[in-house]
Image (cartoon, rainbow, N blue to C red; front, side, top):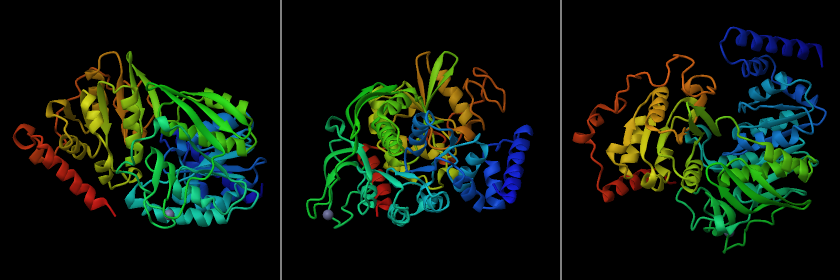
Amino acid sequence: MGFRLELETKAARAVGRLSRAAGRGGGTTLPGKLLWKLDPGAVDELAAGLARGVALVSATNGKTTTTAIAAKILGNRARLAWNRAGANLLSGIGSALLSAEDPELGLFEVDEAALPEAIVRTHPRAVLLGNLFRDQLDRYGELELVAERWRAAVASLPEDAALVVDADDPVVGDLAVAREGVLRFGIDDSRHARPSLQHAADSKYCMRCGSPYEYKAAYVGHLGDYRCAACGHARPALDVVARNIEFRGLWASRFRLVTHAGEVELDLALPGLYNVYNAVGAAALSLSLGASLSEIRTGIEDFSAAFGRFERIGASGKTVVLLLVKNPAGANEVLRTLELGGIPPVLVVALNDAIADGRDVSWIWDVDFEPLLAKAGTIVVSGGRAAELGLLLLYVGLTEDRLEVVPSLEMALDRGLELTDSRASSSSSPRTPRCSLCGESSRDGASSPRTGRRRGEDPGRTPLSGLPQHLRRPREHCRPLPSRGAQGARAGARGRRSR
Ligand SMILES: [Zn+2]
């Protein structure tokens, strides 16, 4: 390590320690941000010092969970530098490199837009490209734009770098078409296919000729076994596949992992097809880095959950299940998982529009909430855009007596627990579940570190207080609309969004 880099890393680490000591937070992300300001080239140098190189993971949905599963597998083989808290820009990679103890292998999830630069700076040994869904319209622009940047990034990869792609995504699968030695992963289990593409599906049209794809099986959004009848563009043969998938309620799934190196039955402590994709992707990445099937099995079976992605938090004899959703495809999969696993009696659904969440929340109108409403009891809506979410739920058929609007996340969580008997509650939280709740991970989930207020104390809740003036008296102003009107309003919202 050069003298200059040594000084920079010492300074950045010291700032992280100071920040933690002062209780200011940011102790994990600040060092990388500072290092990035001081000298962006430091990331290149630190990455170059890793004896076993760097592996990068990017996708719209699931990159945090995929990377966390891969870390379980690969952590048994090497000391990792891993951005486990999900800080996935170059500064977050810098922080992970600074905080790791004598790391050998860098394992980093990377923001989709930051991937090209991350490839240039870290010279990865392996890159996993997962799905591309429409996400954060105000931030990333069109899905096609990200795909074009990824295509150029793939072309810049050295020949000996391993490339792993989700071949069930027509756009992502096509990025690998000109390359040798690619590992293609996907799902083969038509029992779990959807009867048709959902309206939230993004890549419906053949990327070569523009005709609609025909799906033998559509699994998650536009991911599946596709084929274009006009030009023949179809899902390529898969190298790493999940078959015989079984779901065990809201808690787990089991599947057969089929690879060129053999087959193995796996138990995964996560529900939902989208998590099977995450596990198969992590397995494929680990294979490309030399892991054996038995190492993959041990890692996957030891895995519990990535932070905030499918966490279960005990709270006074009750269980809060925390789910993160951030775009229509992800939300629909979470709802399908809830439906299959048994919809909890109380749901707290939060919607935020902070910068990190994406300011444009119009995507919620593309989510299929209807199956949820038929079975859910009370739904408490919360967050900065609670009123809009509440209005949407009324439009799609939730009755007023089952809706509560509690904009404060803390109070909403308390209210959800209050409404739940000691069986189970569920909290589904679009974006920033951690910092918006309390700034820290509250393991008991029952009190706020900031206010110290305990559950059961009067939160001063004022139902419907977050609604705009004209909606505050729902009995006078917000009767559920007749179904045709509701459908019309929603179709109108979708029409405005379609391209
Ligand atoms: Zn075609």
